Image (cartoon, rainbow, N blue to C red; front, side, top):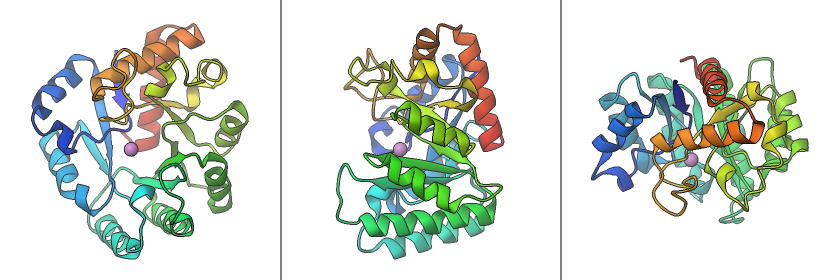
Length: 255
Ligand code: NI
Protein backbone atom coordinates (compact mmCIF):
# COMPACT_ATOMS: atom_id res chain seq x y z
CA UNK A 1 0.00 0.00 0.00
CA UNK A 2 1.35 3.40 -1.03
CA UNK A 3 0.16 6.57 0.68
CA UNK A 4 0.93 10.27 0.26
CA UNK A 5 0.86 13.13 2.72
CA UNK A 6 -0.14 16.10 0.60
CA UNK A 7 0.29 18.69 3.36
CA UNK A 8 2.85 18.65 6.16
CA UNK A 9 5.09 21.22 7.83
CA UNK A 10 7.75 18.73 8.95
CA UNK A 11 10.44 21.40 8.63
CA UNK A 12 9.12 23.29 11.67
CA UNK A 13 11.07 23.34 14.93
CA UNK A 14 8.59 20.91 16.54
CA UNK A 15 10.52 18.22 14.62
CA UNK A 16 14.06 19.49 15.17
CA UNK A 17 14.87 16.93 17.86
CA UNK A 18 13.65 13.77 16.12
CA UNK A 19 13.07 14.53 12.41
CA UNK A 20 15.07 11.45 11.41
CA UNK A 21 12.88 9.13 13.46
CA UNK A 22 9.73 10.79 12.14
CA UNK A 23 10.98 10.14 8.60
CA UNK A 24 11.79 6.50 9.42
CA UNK A 25 8.19 6.03 10.52
CA UNK A 26 7.13 7.66 7.23
CA UNK A 27 8.77 4.93 5.16
CA UNK A 28 7.60 2.19 7.55
CA UNK A 29 3.96 3.33 7.17
CA UNK A 30 4.01 3.24 3.36
CA UNK A 31 4.03 7.01 2.83
CA UNK A 32 6.07 7.53 -0.32
CA UNK A 33 5.75 11.24 -0.96
CA UNK A 34 5.15 14.34 1.15
CA UNK A 35 4.31 17.88 0.09
CA UNK A 36 5.83 20.61 2.26
CA UNK A 37 3.94 23.90 1.80
CA UNK A 38 5.68 27.11 2.82
CA UNK A 39 4.42 29.60 5.44
CA UNK A 40 6.49 32.80 5.09
CA UNK A 41 10.10 34.09 4.90
CA UNK A 42 10.99 32.42 8.19
CA UNK A 43 10.23 28.88 6.99
CA UNK A 44 11.90 28.87 3.57
CA UNK A 45 15.42 27.80 4.60
CA UNK A 46 14.37 24.86 6.76
CA UNK A 47 11.80 23.75 4.18
CA UNK A 48 14.35 23.73 1.35
CA UNK A 49 16.90 21.99 3.57
CA UNK A 50 14.40 19.22 4.25
CA UNK A 51 13.57 18.87 0.55
CA UNK A 52 17.29 18.40 -0.08
CA UNK A 53 17.79 15.95 2.81
CA UNK A 54 14.87 13.79 1.68
CA UNK A 55 15.12 14.16 -2.07
CA UNK A 56 12.43 12.26 -3.92
CA UNK A 57 10.26 12.00 -0.81
CA UNK A 58 9.74 15.61 0.31
CA UNK A 59 8.68 18.25 -2.21
CA UNK A 60 8.43 21.95 -1.39
CA UNK A 61 5.67 24.34 -2.43
CA UNK A 62 6.27 28.09 -2.40
CA UNK A 63 3.76 30.67 -1.17
CA UNK A 64 2.73 33.09 1.54
CA UNK A 65 0.29 31.72 4.14
CA UNK A 66 -2.74 33.96 4.77
CA UNK A 67 -1.97 34.10 8.50
CA UNK A 68 1.38 35.69 7.60
CA UNK A 69 -0.27 38.39 5.48
CA UNK A 70 0.35 41.54 7.53
CA UNK A 71 1.28 45.15 6.83
CA UNK A 72 4.54 44.08 5.17
CA UNK A 73 2.96 41.47 2.90
CA UNK A 74 4.37 43.03 -0.25
CA UNK A 75 7.88 42.40 1.01
CA UNK A 76 6.94 38.80 1.76
CA UNK A 77 5.42 38.39 -1.71
CA UNK A 78 8.53 39.74 -3.36
CA UNK A 79 10.46 36.87 -1.81
CA UNK A 80 7.90 34.30 -2.99
CA UNK A 81 8.03 35.68 -6.52
CA UNK A 82 11.81 35.61 -6.52
CA UNK A 83 11.91 31.97 -5.40
CA UNK A 84 9.30 30.90 -7.95
CA UNK A 85 11.45 32.44 -10.65
CA UNK A 86 14.69 30.79 -9.62
CA UNK A 87 13.77 27.27 -8.49
CA UNK A 88 11.29 24.54 -9.37
CA UNK A 89 8.46 23.92 -6.85
CA UNK A 90 5.61 21.45 -7.07
CA UNK A 91 2.92 24.01 -6.22
CA UNK A 92 2.17 27.54 -5.09
CA UNK A 93 1.14 27.29 -1.47
CA UNK A 94 0.01 27.53 0.97
CA UNK A 95 -2.08 30.53 0.01
CA UNK A 96 -5.64 31.60 0.72
CA UNK A 97 -7.71 33.25 3.39
CA UNK A 98 -8.23 32.93 7.13
CA UNK A 99 -10.95 34.69 9.10
CA UNK A 100 -10.50 32.52 12.17
CA UNK A 101 -7.37 34.00 13.72
CA UNK A 102 -7.55 37.60 12.57
CA UNK A 103 -9.84 39.68 10.31
CA UNK A 104 -7.62 42.79 10.30
CA UNK A 105 -5.92 42.06 6.98
CA UNK A 106 -8.86 40.61 5.06
CA UNK A 107 -8.33 42.93 2.06
CA UNK A 108 -4.62 42.23 1.97
CA UNK A 109 -5.30 38.48 2.17
CA UNK A 110 -7.48 38.73 -0.91
CA UNK A 111 -4.89 40.75 -2.78
CA UNK A 112 -2.04 38.39 -1.83
CA UNK A 113 -4.15 35.41 -2.88
CA UNK A 114 -5.00 36.88 -6.28
CA UNK A 115 -1.37 37.81 -6.98
CA UNK A 116 -0.12 34.35 -6.07
CA UNK A 117 -2.78 32.62 -8.17
CA UNK A 118 -1.52 34.64 -11.14
CA UNK A 119 2.00 33.38 -10.44
CA UNK A 120 0.68 29.82 -10.31
CA UNK A 121 -0.85 30.34 -13.75
CA UNK A 122 2.37 31.84 -15.08
CA UNK A 123 4.49 28.94 -13.79
CA UNK A 124 1.75 26.37 -14.59
CA UNK A 125 1.65 25.10 -11.01
CA UNK A 126 -1.29 23.90 -8.92
CA UNK A 127 -2.30 25.91 -5.85
CA UNK A 128 -2.62 24.72 -2.26
CA UNK A 129 -5.45 26.64 -0.64
CA UNK A 130 -5.91 27.36 3.05
CA UNK A 131 -9.39 28.66 3.95
CA UNK A 132 -10.38 28.70 7.57
CA UNK A 133 -13.85 30.10 8.35
CA UNK A 134 -13.74 31.49 4.80
CA UNK A 135 -14.52 28.66 2.40
CA UNK A 136 -17.40 30.33 0.49
CA UNK A 137 -15.43 33.53 0.02
CA UNK A 138 -12.41 31.55 -1.19
CA UNK A 139 -14.41 29.42 -3.64
CA UNK A 140 -15.88 32.69 -5.00
CA UNK A 141 -12.37 34.04 -5.50
CA UNK A 142 -11.16 30.90 -7.26
CA UNK A 143 -14.20 30.96 -9.55
CA UNK A 144 -13.37 34.50 -10.66
CA UNK A 145 -9.70 33.58 -11.22
CA UNK A 146 -10.29 30.33 -13.13
CA UNK A 147 -8.80 29.66 -16.52
CA UNK A 148 -8.46 26.45 -18.55
CA UNK A 149 -5.42 25.21 -16.64
CA UNK A 150 -5.71 26.37 -13.03
CA UNK A 151 -6.04 23.52 -10.57
CA UNK A 152 -5.30 22.81 -6.94
CA UNK A 153 -6.50 21.56 -3.61
CA UNK A 154 -8.66 22.99 -0.85
CA UNK A 155 -6.50 21.77 2.00
CA UNK A 156 -8.10 20.67 5.29
CA UNK A 157 -11.51 20.49 3.66
CA UNK A 158 -14.25 20.61 6.29
CA UNK A 159 -17.09 22.04 4.25
CA UNK A 160 -20.53 20.76 3.37
CA UNK A 161 -21.78 18.92 0.29
CA UNK A 162 -22.80 22.08 -1.57
CA UNK A 163 -19.30 23.50 -1.15
CA UNK A 164 -17.80 20.18 -2.20
CA UNK A 165 -19.91 20.30 -5.39
CA UNK A 166 -18.57 23.73 -6.29
CA UNK A 167 -14.99 22.54 -5.72
CA UNK A 168 -15.67 19.48 -7.85
CA UNK A 169 -17.03 21.67 -10.64
CA UNK A 170 -13.82 23.69 -10.57
CA UNK A 171 -11.90 20.44 -11.06
CA UNK A 172 -10.10 21.02 -7.76
CA UNK A 173 -9.32 18.45 -5.06
CA UNK A 174 -10.27 18.33 -1.39
CA UNK A 175 -7.58 17.54 1.16
CA UNK A 176 -8.90 15.36 3.98
CA UNK A 177 -7.01 15.35 7.26
CA UNK A 178 -7.29 14.63 10.96
CA UNK A 179 -10.56 16.55 11.39
CA UNK A 180 -12.27 13.66 9.56
CA UNK A 181 -11.51 11.44 12.56
CA UNK A 182 -12.95 13.84 15.17
CA UNK A 183 -16.27 12.82 16.70
CA UNK A 184 -17.49 16.44 16.64
CA UNK A 185 -15.85 17.29 13.28
CA UNK A 186 -19.07 16.85 11.32
CA UNK A 187 -17.27 15.12 8.46
CA UNK A 188 -18.83 11.68 9.06
CA UNK A 189 -21.97 12.85 7.24
CA UNK A 190 -20.13 14.54 4.36
CA UNK A 191 -17.29 12.15 3.46
CA UNK A 192 -19.49 9.20 2.41
CA UNK A 193 -20.83 11.44 -0.39
CA UNK A 194 -17.55 12.89 -1.62
CA UNK A 195 -16.17 11.42 -4.85
CA UNK A 196 -12.95 9.47 -4.24
CA UNK A 197 -11.51 10.86 -7.50
CA UNK A 198 -11.47 14.35 -5.91
CA UNK A 199 -9.90 13.43 -2.55
CA UNK A 200 -6.36 13.78 -1.25
CA UNK A 201 -5.13 12.77 2.19
CA UNK A 202 -2.96 14.96 4.38
CA UNK A 203 -1.85 15.51 7.96
CA UNK A 204 -1.05 19.24 8.27
CA UNK A 205 1.68 18.10 10.70
CA UNK A 206 2.40 19.14 13.39
CA UNK A 207 -1.24 20.28 13.75
CA UNK A 208 -4.62 18.52 13.76
CA UNK A 209 -3.56 15.02 14.81
CA UNK A 210 -6.10 12.32 13.98
CA UNK A 211 -7.71 10.23 16.70
CA UNK A 212 -6.21 8.55 18.81
CA UNK A 213 -3.38 11.13 18.80
CA UNK A 214 -5.69 14.16 18.94
CA UNK A 215 -4.12 17.05 20.86
CA UNK A 216 -0.58 15.72 20.42
CA UNK A 217 1.98 16.47 17.73
CA UNK A 218 0.93 15.16 14.33
CA UNK A 219 3.33 13.41 11.91
CA UNK A 220 3.10 12.10 8.37
CA UNK A 221 2.84 8.40 9.31
CA UNK A 222 -0.57 9.19 10.81
CA UNK A 223 -1.97 9.87 7.34
CA UNK A 224 -2.73 6.12 7.34
CA UNK A 225 -5.33 6.81 10.05
CA UNK A 226 -7.00 9.38 7.83
CA UNK A 227 -7.08 6.92 4.91
CA UNK A 228 -8.59 4.27 7.19
CA UNK A 229 -11.25 6.70 8.39
CA UNK A 230 -12.27 7.52 4.80
CA UNK A 231 -12.43 3.80 4.02
CA UNK A 232 -14.64 3.18 7.09
CA UNK A 233 -16.99 6.07 6.32
CA UNK A 234 -17.31 5.12 2.65
CA UNK A 235 -17.46 1.40 3.51
CA UNK A 236 -14.73 0.49 1.05
CA UNK A 237 -11.31 -1.13 1.35
CA UNK A 238 -8.36 0.85 2.68
CA UNK A 239 -6.43 -0.26 -0.43
CA UNK A 240 -8.95 1.50 -2.64
CA UNK A 241 -8.58 4.77 -0.72
CA UNK A 242 -4.78 4.49 -0.88
CA UNK A 243 -4.78 3.74 -4.60
CA UNK A 244 -7.18 6.59 -5.48
CA UNK A 245 -5.62 9.29 -3.28
CA UNK A 246 -2.09 8.41 -4.38
CA UNK A 247 -3.11 8.56 -8.01
CA UNK A 248 -4.93 11.89 -7.42
CA UNK A 249 -1.84 13.33 -5.74
CA UNK A 250 0.33 12.15 -8.64
CA UNK A 251 -2.00 13.84 -11.10
CA UNK A 252 -2.04 17.10 -9.19
CA UNK A 253 1.63 17.42 -8.29
CA UNK A 254 3.11 15.56 -11.24
CA UNK A 255 4.63 12.89 -8.96
NI1 NI B 1 -0.63 24.13 6.49
